[in-house]
Length: 162
Image 1: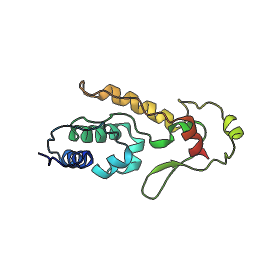
Image 2 (image 1 turned 60 degrees about the vertical axis):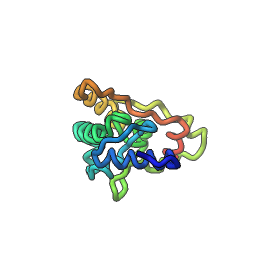
Image 3 (image 1 turned 180 degrees about the vertical axis):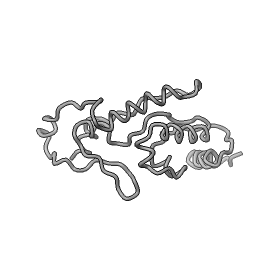
């Protein structure tokens, strides 16, 4: 068990290490929200495959979710780009495969207000997120709830585009 003077951070980190190693823990202190960098680190999955193949994203998340004693969120994970790409932002990948948006040239509030609503079914990562959501819902085990992709707030979206 834990020392009487151990901190919540120490206990949580110890539980996290044990879960990653596939060991049983005594419980979870917090809700864990995992995204692509974590899945990449734990499994070594190439991020290009993770982002562009719903079956791969599903299988990787399911593997880690079960390893983590189903503590966390099971959902499409398009990174921080879904809304931005639907608004015309160009997606880029760094040398490690991490996804982001190129600078768009927007520099004022007035320019941001001129943006037209994004098309969730266009050729963009919002569409990829919705396709992945459909795949995950259709294939998830009955005891796992699939959450929708996380939506970014307007200020976050504008900041990314800028």
